[in-house]
Length: 477
Image (cartoon, rainbow, N blue to C red; front, top):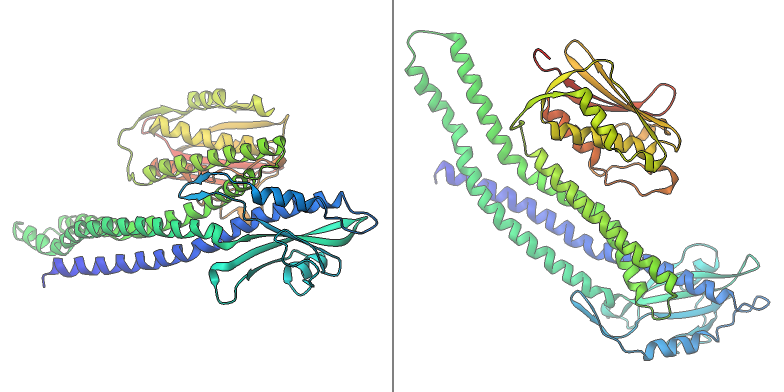
């Protein structure tokens, strides 16, 4: 067996093991994530119906007469809803109501009226004032008959006088789980084939570093005399080339796995919100204002996913670059004024002040530098209080230019100081605004690295946050 074949098989085995472990973890995580999403939507539904019943409580007695005609009509409805690969034709939600002792007052399926449900965890915990939920099989030994229940208290005069539990058969969203598993396995099989091709290419690349020794010896034979400095320089150059090729070959899988995990984690929340809103929109009795609100939630969360995807593509392309392809002299003072003029500061009630007493010129990509400064300024504007000012300043040192962006916001929490440049890490925005994608500062760090500089973020003296971008000056600039 040749050396190239052994290297190819070793890389293939490593990739296969990595892909197998990652596939197992992702597939095993699909079902819990779908259950969490379904449970979250059931929580809102149960709270909604419990609030409706609270309007009919008389002297602490729960009146359920409005539920019977409602569910009779709902169960009789027939419709056609194509939800991706699932064709839904009827409502599968079920509801039961108990009094304060856990005795069933109403059951939408007509099976359990008058029975004592106080032993069930959703009833017991809800009547005790805590969150109650359970998953129980309708038929013992049949996992496909499992039903997820979520309870909500019914209050009268501040006292819990009963509870309402909403159930949904697990099988109704189990079809989504199976479809997601099949799609995930398909994607990973395609990825495995692509990685096998990469292993072939990498095995060819990896043979070259082992051949560097022979090449170095051949080079020595062509030299006349003993030249230690030249020999050392040649050896260092060959070693640097070998390390670069080894690094490229071995880091590919880790980067892909990291992106898959972080991206999956980040889109889980908006996907859950979209799925929950879509399920609630199927309710025919939903008021029009509520319907408009849930449609707005779907539009907003879809836009958030699109923004995450776009930012991830930009960041991935930037990380793949080791050096700047084309550079030019960039004057920083005009760039600062240009970025400040284009910022959406007035719409947020914040002023942007530029302080650049002296200009400085760096060697770099003006588009990337503008993006970096724009991200820093947008980040500062997000945290700046209305009516305050964000200061964008330029200082020139003997060897480097320093650009600072300071806001007058709440500053950086202690726990976040080591995490702000991590992908997808984002702090809550003041005023209850949504968090950002968490990719902006990671993008700035990559741009600073490509330009031979660095970026830091810390609390400013006197309050607020202070971002500092340091760039080496251009020779003669």
